[in-house]
Amino acid sequence: MTKRIPLNVLDLIGISEGQTIKEALEQALESAKLLDKLGYKRLWFAEHHNTISLASMATSNIIGLAAQVTENIRIGSGGIMLPNHSPLQVAESFGTIAQLHPDRIDLGLGRAPGTDAQTAQLITRSSADPQSFANSILDLIGWFSDKGLAHSVPVTSNVGTGTNIPIWVLGSSMQGASIAGQLGLPYSIATHFTPDDFKAKIDQYRSSFKTTSPTAQIDKPYVMAGINVVVAPTDEEAERIWTTTQQFLMDMLTGKKRLLQPPVDPEELGTEQDRKKIDSMFSIKAVGSPETVRKKLEDFTEQTGADELIVVTYTYDPEDRKRSMEMLADLWF
Image 1 (cartoon, one colour):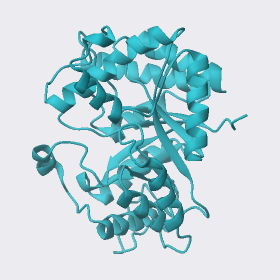
Image 2 (cartoon, one colour):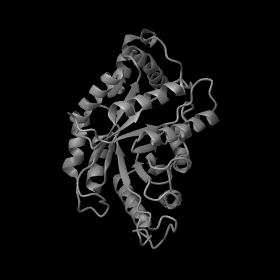
Image 3 (cartoon, one colour):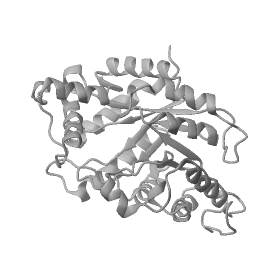
Image 4 (cartoon, one colour):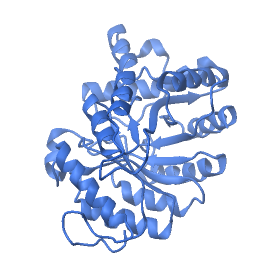
């Protein structure tokens, strides 16, 4: 029997047609309370910009709010796109949250902008090249240490001092995997939307892992892998709910700006070529009845050798997402 590794949730805070942004944010906090009670290990919030169907823009703000309404679950970023931010301000934001919620905050960092090129020009604050990324992480580790000083300059974040916030590296490419390994940090691989060559990327991370790196925080490779999940009483119902995600991806590919759409019959999803393209991008998924999802999660765990899984669930109806999370907890924990 496959080992039941920890299960986590990545929330992009989808906004459904007919729902206000305020309602979507409130629903995200209600979901955080539920996940806490159900026993999930982590709840991470993503960072995206210029996307009208998502509300996960001010990531540190929502992390602070979610930490306030929960008790045990770890809350973190999946991730903070570091080139969009001053590293010192990241240390101050996360340090403040961690002071109020000690030993419950994770900082996942990525190098992508999390948006289109035009929007990236408006928010870019630091370089995305690997060396600059590594230097910023080294400074962050310094700001979170007991000394509270950056590695590069004798400057303190003050509120970050002594928080020792764990840092993860997010990645979707072979280079990202290599960077995570060379930095000696845990690696969260975005298999939920870049499934190609995921085994090779994980192997690359493990083979390049260095405990001697000045940024190293763990003594051996540690992998969290992303997977799309929808659980419903039957395979047919889950597949229909899944069409909301398929429509969302199709909108992204075609540039259509819509909120999350109600489910449709699968054959209504564009051309056969469109459906094949969607399926190839979101092929890492466990969509179906509890038994179907359990088997797919077990298979994916075996394929990746992951230490943890992080699931992504888009639904038009918040009640469908709530039920999916409850049924997922029942079948896995």
